Length: 235
Picture: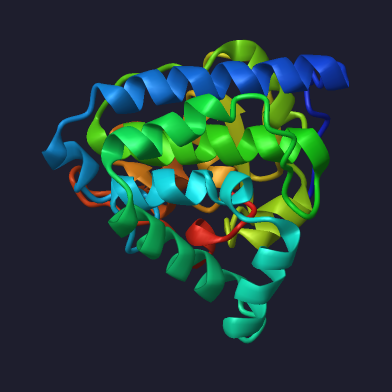
């Protein structure tokens, strides 16, 4: 049974702090997206079946679709969230240029959208994790600022790890670069942002983790694609 340990270094911050972190993350990611070439936009991400362009399109879904439109899309997908988000991401990725996709992220830096559960911290997680889905898959060494990671690591709990199929039973995640750990069992060591990806059901390229169970959470370098929940509307 997965257990929570005391989460050291929990820097949840105020609501205004989280909103400022969201805006900064979106602007920084949009600037990074503007530097990508065509091959990188078309390269696979850590999200199963999605290229970088589909991930960026998905990141903007909450800005593009009103609540009635989103409910209509859900109805057409027969209530299947993964099916709805996949259809939307593929459609918008095909309809917009890469410059338009990046601009949607930048122009909505202060948009108040949040996922159905979790409020502003969940919105920050959506941006950070999908940004890592892109940068880690492309081999770009972008470091998420520590204050944003502390907010998100402080939110890691059994609900999130179960929702994303993280499979952390019998494992304790231990960050090398922040005073944070989660779970109970054999330790897996890595950077805080790589461990955040594990908590959200992703696997990272080999060589990024240490510890006996680390092979459960790695994939050969160059192989992309996340778990089944990687394309969900939560993150």
